[in-house]
Length: 200
Image (cartoon, rainbow, N blue to C red; front, top):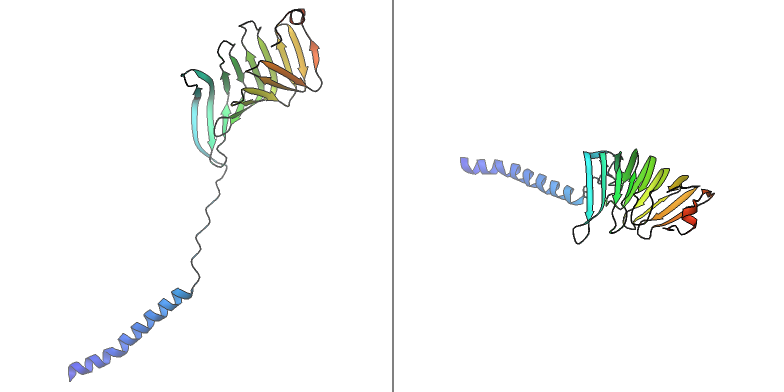
């Protein structure tokens, strides 16, 4: 009889435990699902650095098409852009003079298709293959790498051999060797460029 009494006294405890379990389950079933915290937006903060930065692109034959170098590079996680110190962009075309674009600072996008050069920006095309040396100076040049084009919306000074021109903007196609000047264009053209000189 003592055992039966023990079992009888345990029944209310078991019943209460079962009731508590059912109540907890019902509460969990009726509560709205826990919302996951939204993914934090990436911040415009540096996520890696490089000194003596250099990147090149080769064609199918392994020949270098362009090379971008800089004294230092700082990459940002939000837009994949990078800040450059003392950048230099060199573009190579078969049987044509090398073109080099330099500046005190610059930026490059994530896939290295757009390079912006700021402060004492300069384009220098070496002499050769029938062309004299050409130099353009401005406070900003944008290099469109995939199109092989350099442009600026800032005042520019252009010197081609002895000819000197100034303008409010410029577009230079490195493939066709065509130079377009925009806005208020002024300057002097050497006789050698007028009388039989190469127009490219």
